[in-house]
Amino acid sequence: MAKVYGYCRVSTAEQADGRASLAAQEQQIRGYAMMKGWEVTEFFIEAGVSGSVPLADRPEGRRLLGAAGKGDIIVTAKLDRAFRSAADALAVLEEFKDQGIGLHMIDLGGDVCGNGISKMVFTILAAVAEGERDRIRERIRDAKRHLASKGVFSGGKRTYGFDIVKDGDVRRIVPNLAEQAIIERMKAMRAKGATYREIGGEFKMYGRSVQRILERAAKG
Image: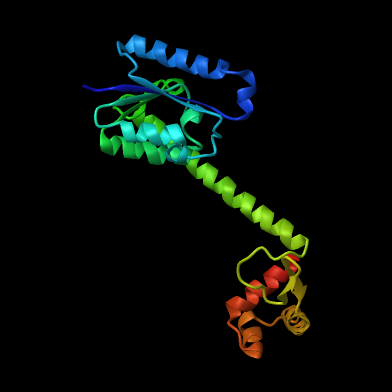
């Protein structure tokens, strides 16, 4: 016989409000189950666990995933109670569908693994997940640019015209005077109308490499 599991979570910051938030989530889940004619078999209560932790890495989340089997149903009040991001939700939902486990998220209208609104939910989650990945990539780029502006090397390949030197606990970016002189000569040749290929021939480089070096130098 299929079992119905309720999942609730509050973060450490929300603990200041006592069990109010947890009680509200439990009440929502019980009410939803009652409307469906179900009885909640067990509640998995995640108290004081950050939403940034994946479901499978949370103590109660791990226990829930171990308990749920084919035909069982998991109910949670909101998407952000169960998942850390849309990408995380999308991955777990796909696993649930493969395993025949139902997932009902009350804030999204209910069943997100069945035939009802699941296709729309998956489409939205996929789009949001891509947006999340883009924002993460942009934050990483911004962080690296900030470190570079402070002269701190944040990893990756060495940029032509600069050396990486150890300075205490950090590695710093310092100008390579010989290569900087070559860049200045490249700029002068380019200003006189030389092609990237011609400049590359002068310094035994590919024209495309010369173009990247000069474009990077122009950005400062």
